[in-house]
Image 1 (cartoon, rainbow, N blue to C red):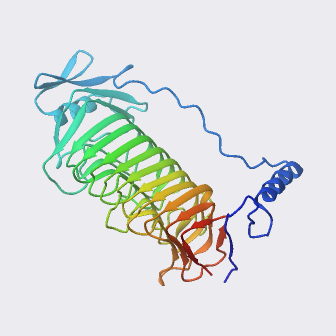
Image 2 (tube, rainbow, N blue to C red):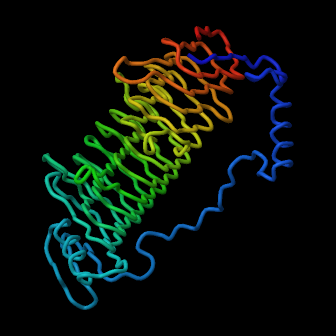
Image 3 (cartoon, one colour):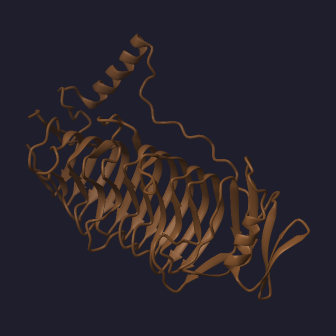
Length: 402
């Protein structure tokens, strides 16, 4: 069982586990970089954001347009659908694209309408969808139905999508690769926002997924969930009063997330603003650092950060967690997790807890650092292996660690 060290940040000279001051440790790291030729430790640089095109701008190969109560889908001068059904018009426009294409073709939807929860618009490979309007999902259904759906496809893009109503899933993508989701806004009263997985064929990863900006409110399940994804880049997930997690990563590797911002995610449950589960971050039989999260913000809800069921390989740079109903942070049977690598605060709500279930190996290589903990607690039980508590400041808070 490894030794653990705790050093509370009560002044600028707080020590790390080797007894050096924080400033000295940084200076030593920079000196080492000069001697070895390695890069000095710096905050990751962020590229300037690309300007976002307005919905519907640019060239396209097909479109579905609402005029009065009539939808018309056309490719060039050819009309491929006329009627009152938004789903049928959108699918007809998609189906009119070049058969067997090996480069992307684009469909623009101009207008708002309804789609039944028990139906879907299916996107084949090399399809770009841009929805300039709002889809309202009505009724009920079962299975993997979603207004935007793809399975076994590649090179798919959804540039803009506004969604309301009662979907089973807002977007459902299974065993796909090379996916881009741009500006996604879902204001729901049921369902799961975005689900991307490989559960149709678990021998194959879903690969290379990018989500720029997603806002989800009112979902009864998660705002965004992945399972079996290799290569994930997310800008911002904003979750408001969703029933379960803001962002849930299952068995997902090589992931970079800029920010998770959650109000009321998983209220009354054990879910979290940001949750990792089911061997998330496990590469082969190990846990090299491959999941990088810039910031997690949680206000109220269930938990703030939750790592469970043999997950790890993660660095979370900053956390701001306040008044969570369950644990502010729970790390349970996880490996190589560095929390608040840069800074963080936990205020009120549930304690910071390191725990373990008997069916999995105990926590290992966990670092909890740079936190200001107010009106809460830090507790480790049972003792993990090679746990480090460093530069944490306790304000009206208690600590019970090994």
